[in-house]
Image 1: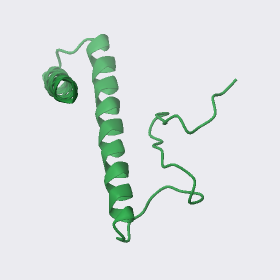
Image 2: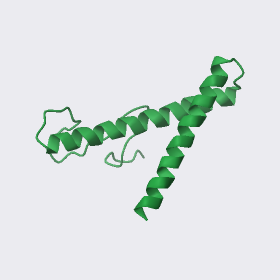
Image 3: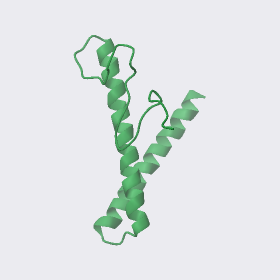
Image 4: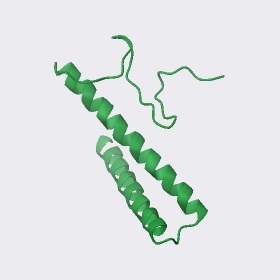
Length: 96
């Protein structure tokens, strides 16, 4: 099951990166529609969030291994989270 999920996630990531490059090419060639431009912005935001999340996880692993790294914590019990263009993990309370 894990390998199927990993394959699916890798394929989604590859397709997202390919689509992002395709949309960026259309923008460079000045053939992009407004929808293309919005989709490019969205794809770039998703990619940035994913990269940020990977860095948070890497820093947390390095911290647990005793290395000096920056982690976003207000206390030892606080779980790290990502804030980038409104992207957060579930440790923030929902807004009413």
